[in-house]
Amino acid sequence: MLKGIYRHFLKLAEGYSINKHWMLLFFLFGLATLVFPIESVTQDQKMTLFDQDQFILSNQPESFKYPGVMFWHRLDQPIRCMFHHRNVSKEVLNIGLMLMNTTGVPAKISMFLGLGGPSTDIVFAGHKAAESFFESVLKMKPIQLEVPPHTTLPLFWVPVKNQQTVSGLFRLESSVSIDVKLIAFDHEYPSLASLTDIGDIKMFKPALYQESIRKITYEFDTQSQILGFQIGGVPFVKDLNRDIQIKGNYGMIYQVYLKLKNSEKEKKTVRLFAQPAKSNSIDRGVFLIQGKLKTIRLLKFSDGLLNAELLEEWSLEPNQTKEIELVTLPQAGCFYPIDMTIRVVR
Image 1 (cartoon, one colour):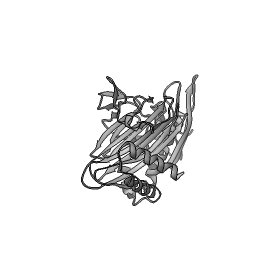
Image 2: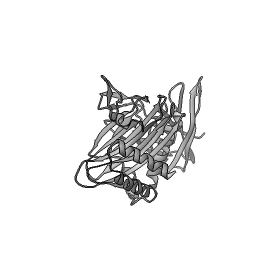
Image 3: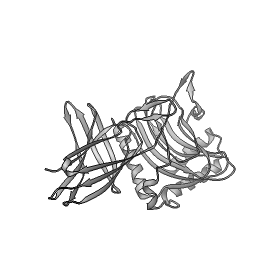
Image 4: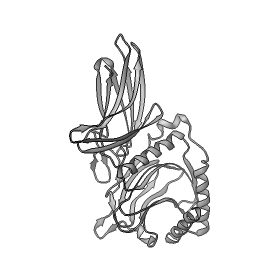
């Protein structure tokens, strides 16, 4: 298996004129850092990790059939990216991430990564990417590596067959400014991966979000009986590249604080539910609730029938208050926004 992976590295090295000896070093060093992360961030950094991120969404178009540059971004501050694409060509195409250090000093890289697919199940691919990304954040052990000066490093690639979808979420931070490039490429014709358009048609249109994280507080008293809010709802985030709104706010981190209070004289139980908001929709989700990972199964809203799932419940003594932290994001492959409901058990 490792021999096969290394052969792919060599092919990629030839296509991008990268020295094969450097490629061997990258391969061995990258393998070591994946298995033995060099260091980890502290627990105190966990929930402030995303505050200063830029966010890029690569999903336009969702279906692709030609090699080319999906996005090319100059990394001057931490970025988070979600990509979600389906190969509709007859050939096997690859999606890969390249890091290019054009400076004269080494670039120290820290990366959280979640990948889903390749799969013919669009919803599963998006869900797996979100789940594995949050799992990596919970472990607080990012991949650590170093890109030498004046060097291009292929960080990962995924072969995608016809009608398969690959989805990914990653967060990158670098000690110096570097270029980050997500590409679709064919191993037989690697030079085509540099294409940005065909004639007057720009093949890929990544979105650069106006905001990457949204922090919201909701207060709920048991006397109110019920409270509803949405993940991925209005206001929709603006794409700064095209000056349009991205309905569903896909990939944006939601950090929700729930302040629960029981002002009644008897003990009350409060439950949190998730359910689709759109008719004819299919949804899944991943949540960190008080630092614990929760996933929701496939939820459907069709033919007037609505599925809901219980995420968590809390007991409140008379006059007791509880503060709950919930972190999630609208995942790729689904139909966000979704509805969240807090209600008292009668």
